[in-house]
Amino acid sequence: MAASKVLARALSAEARVTLWRSLQTFTVTRIVIALVLLLYLGFDVESGRIKTDPVNAETCFAYAAAALVFAVVAARWRRRFIVQLGAQIATDLAAISLLYLAAGGMRSGLGILYLFPLAGAAILAPLVLALFSASLAAIFLLLESVWQIFMSDREPPLMQAGMYGAAFFAAVLMVNRLAARLLGQEELAAQRGADLRIQQAINHIVIADVGDGILVVGDEGRLYTGNPAARRMLGLEGEAEGFLLGEVPALEPVAQAYAGWRAAPNEEAAFVTIKPWHEQGDSEDGGAAVVRGRRDQPVHLKLRFARVDTGSQAEGRSVIFMQDVSAIENEAQQLKLASMGRLTASIAHEVRNPLSAIGHATALLAEDLHGPAEVRLLKIVSDNVARVNRMVEDILQLSRKAQPHTEPVQLSSFLAELKAEFCEIHALDGDIVWLGNAGGATVRFDPLHLHEVLLNLLNNAIRYASRKPASIRIFPSSDAAGRLELHVQDDGPGITPEVRAHLFEPFYTTSSKGTGLGLYLARELCLNNDAKLDYEYRFDQAAMGPRKASGRFVISFVQPA
Image 1 (cartoon, one colour):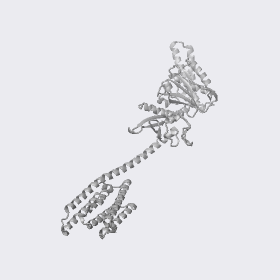
Image 2 (tube, helix red, strand yellow):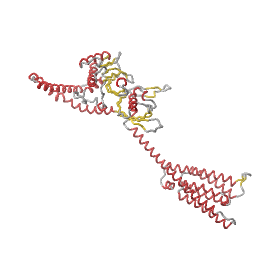
Image 3 (cartoon, rainbow, N blue to C red):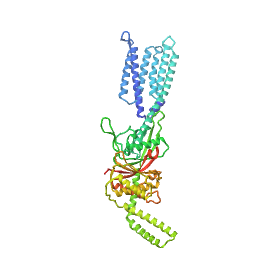
């Protein structure tokens, strides 16, 4: 039934191949049967001669030759499947009927040979054709038995002929039903395979073109694969994979964030910074390096994690989704800078002059008014005038490109003087600010600019630090590429990811007393001196406790003095 349905509709390529392959198997089986019949009925094994019965010999030779022809045609000419199959079944029925008559009818036992073509018809042909073939075989056996009634004195085996006929129909129905199920499953498997290939092609396009990075890693942190966006974000070249993320120094933040997520799967997304880094690990034959890294700008990544359900017996896999938030930050910053450029063109005349008049009038009033209420109100006015004036100065400074006067700066003595000045301004104990050992490290930087940048970072740190010993830390370090860095860190609660996304944007502030321009100006001053200022999340077990992510401001110097 299913065979007829499959043949009635357009077949898939896989189903057509299966049918033709089954027909070839059918023809090979026919050749074997023809050769066996030829040896059994056409030759005398003891004398090695052809038997004297010409019918058996000629029929066996003709049947063997036809079987070879059918095999060649089915292999070379894959057309007209039903025509070829019908011709083969008709030949089988004719040859077996001739041999059946020549061998003496039902008593020869050759009636069992009808099962071969009938089984082939049940498997490959529609049900109607298979039942028609079975009816021809059954009618032939019954007619031959009836003929024996008139031609022989012996009682013909009518019962045996009827049993053979019933067996033929039962065999055809049963085999056709089994073939129907197999053909249906074959067609379904072919359709599922085609759908799966299409889905894989779609997934490949989506994964290859999606802007977010995708990494597949094992439980131990081994990288198995990644899409082009992930390789671009991490700076991986070629098909580098199979290595542990923790083995590459620049990728260690990703490995630590992944390990932290595995320890606490319910944690939210992590933020890491991937810095420029050199190639890591040479091949055993001394050839090119296996893994190569970024050599351009640091990239800030937002990481999200998902567990892959691979079953209890398979090695664990997880997917890391990476989003480059640097581009988002830069785009927002460019929008604000565009609007700020239009503002600074007229701010000196429209704001600064009236502000100066207000400040001068406040000073004159302070000379005449001495009551407590008046003094308090005048102080409020004066403080806000100073605040607005400071904001105006910062805005005007943005429109002027500061020209640096770089010179070699020895960090050890420079940081010691800065610490003493800062502690004196804020009346702090000397042990609150901890300085790392800078040794003889020297950088090329404008001293006034470096002083302004570090003082701005320290002023931010003192707002949130606990003011315990070493609650503010300034220490030099080296990145994965060997470049010198200067870290400024406090033991405060740290900056949330939401604030981090806007940290260096102009006019963005979380303080009621801030202008939102300090960190932006500090970054601009660093850029003017061929350095970079950034805020990084780190896993600092020594200072912040095990597996706790902390943040720090990092000044990266392009090259030492």
